[in-house]
Image (cartoon, rainbow, N blue to C red; front, side):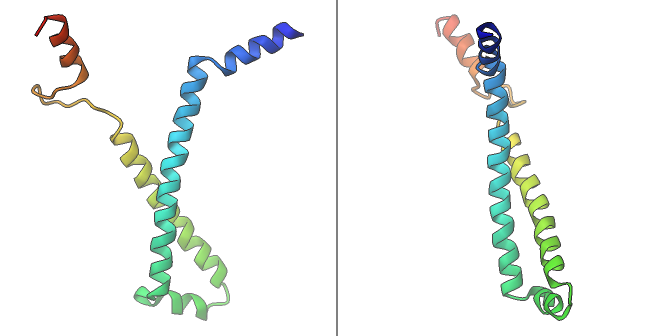
Length: 113
């Protein structure tokens, strides 16, 4: 029995598992940033009654559903934008040949420059 438990621990602590946890953490973190932005934006829209949205919602008998759908849509939008920005900011590569990326630095170090 200890052999099976040991194998499971090795898989859980492998480099691939650590990287997968890191990616999931990255995605949740950036989506949460977008969710916070959505809450702030939605609250401001309702507070200032932009376009009469708050008045219209409160005049309806389905106000809680309306508010929930508003915030759900904002969360999806802002969360997706935040996640997209985070993913696009991951890379350090540029199509510009004069860009001082890690490959050029290591190439110069090898040549003694």
